[in-house]
Length: 378
Image 1 (cartoon, rainbow, N blue to C red):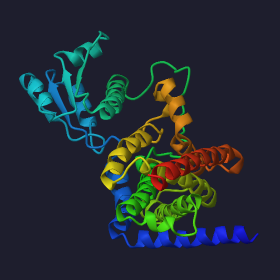
Image 2: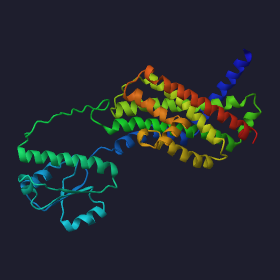
Image 3: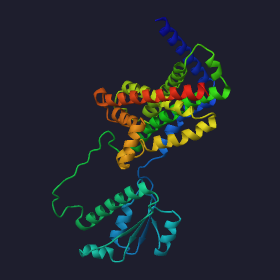
Image 4: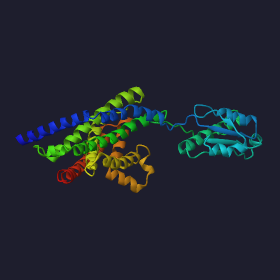
């Protein structure tokens, strides 16, 4: 019993030492504050995928009532006011990126519509803006179809439609990208900063030569590694909690559907596993520069292929299995969306908590093994 108490006492003092080391690093503290405040606000409000202010040009070779009606229906906030072009100006305007869409009305367009003849409209799209090109073209097609129906039938239907499609968007009725972006940015920053802080904690010890000081103290490798994992995870969990409540919920007015304590429980276990991964990466480095070069590609893969930015289903099947087998980040994305978006309870997400524990145990065991072989003996 006394050995257990002594082990816990040593762990506690090492834990306090790590918290003081974090407090003594002002640059790292500024990074944490920035990442969970200004970065989340600017990214979620600025990096929007919603249709807004898309530049449209029109070539009206018909100059009819119908063409002017369609042009008049293309209005803000989805689109900018259409700009009239000549046919000779279209290619140059698209090459310079002045417009996303160029709508060309051919001669006799209205006459063909009224005569029930096939009529064609040409819509040229700058597909370098792939999201806007796809969604914006659909919006323009709907506008054109509605205006043609209004022009021909006065808004009435000539034939009864067999099916009336009613769409209801669950969890985000207005399809507001800020709701999604803010939550996912918090999740991405949890991953990024947990890995960086934990790895930097070990690199800092090695660069300052204080690892040797620890070796002459009555502590073991497991206490050293676990203290770093716990201290850095605690800092990130506190910062993420405040960010979720203050920045996301209060400042950005994003509703939180599920249980915050349940989300915090999963976040605590997840940060412990990612902190262990950070320690593992740091054991392969001898300087902060080497650790940064090693951590950057890992973070890029974790953030881009976790399912937070693009659906996992859109990835190759082998890559989906690889990500879910080798990393815990895709499971944390699913956990976050289930709890915060869909209001899922413990019966729905308990398996994710077990996955976090499993990955954390593996990462911690590997980091401890590497710490003993590469740091203590190296």
